[in-house]
Amino acid sequence: MMIDSACEAFLTGQSVSDGAHDIGHVRRVVALARQIGADMGADLAVVVPAAWLHDCVSVAKDSPDRSKASWLAAEAAVAFLEKLGYPAEHGAAIHHAIVAHSFSLGTPPESLEAQVVQDADRLDAIGAIGIARCFLTGGAMGSAMFHGEDPFATGRALDDKAYAVDHFYLKLLTLKETLHTDAARREAQRRHDFMVAFLDELRGELAG
Image 1 (cartoon, rainbow, N blue to C red):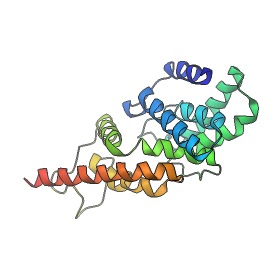
Image 2: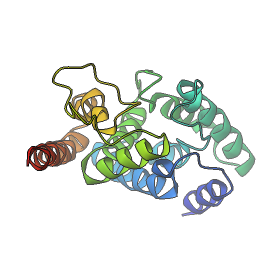
Image 3: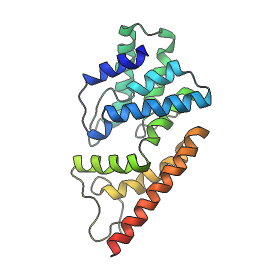
Image 4: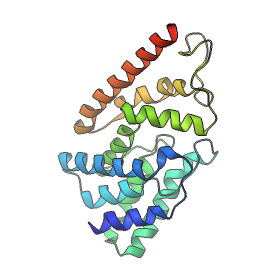
């Protein structure tokens, strides 16, 4: 499809601040969004370009401007699609879907299409892929894998800037409850259970 090739070509020219938000992440989100959108009857003319371009402006996880990333991406996406000659009637819906996908910004998705894109992005943050991305991001930020004396924060405050495992409890294990679409919720439960099993295995290995 033309929109797929055009968006992918556009993204190859953008800088990426971390490996967890590379072109592989984008392709997975597009595939999930297309599948969920078709299942839910969403307008794929909005869903697909929004999924492709949701991270088209890269802001590092530890940047003070991180919460602005989705707004900056939405602005850049709409400008790119206008130059591409994409139908202008979809511009506002695409802009909103990109803005609303962000966890840190906290903008509620007000359309089915925005819900689909947000759900697809959050699905890619959990399960086996989510575990890999969590530790990849933690390493890039200089975080330890876990606290040496209290890895599961039974007697300390959680701090996912210092310890990657803390990020499961502060964010990743909460994501399945934030999803909107039935199609995404079904897949989220399976991925959530995998993360719980991983943490149980890690706890057992650390206990010896």
